[in-house]
Image (tube, rainbow, N blue to C red; front, side):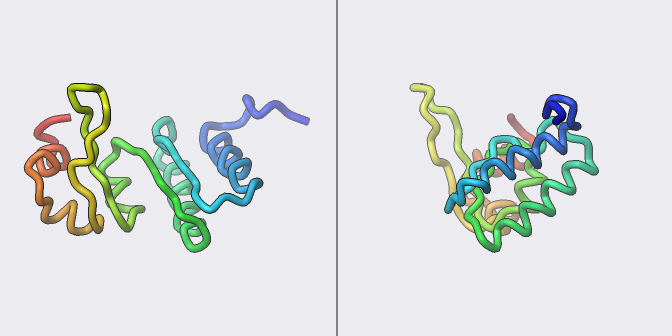
Length: 115
């Protein structure tokens, strides 16, 4: 037996996903699933997400706009309010959010004007 700490970042991430699948969930939550990974490991995780989305609902939290555009069907943009509670600014099909956002704050974020 080897310690999981000896695994690469991508291997550790796949192990975490395998552990989540072991309990047969309906929804898989992924918080910044590729934040510390190199481009090759990121590609592998995104490929795994494409396979898994056929059977599971996957919710990802990411600050990586390119990744959100690549892997999601729907996108929600949230901003921290004054009371430190996340405010839903906009939700819709990913293509629409990225090509024709309805809210200026969404447009500003995805174009890099703030954030």
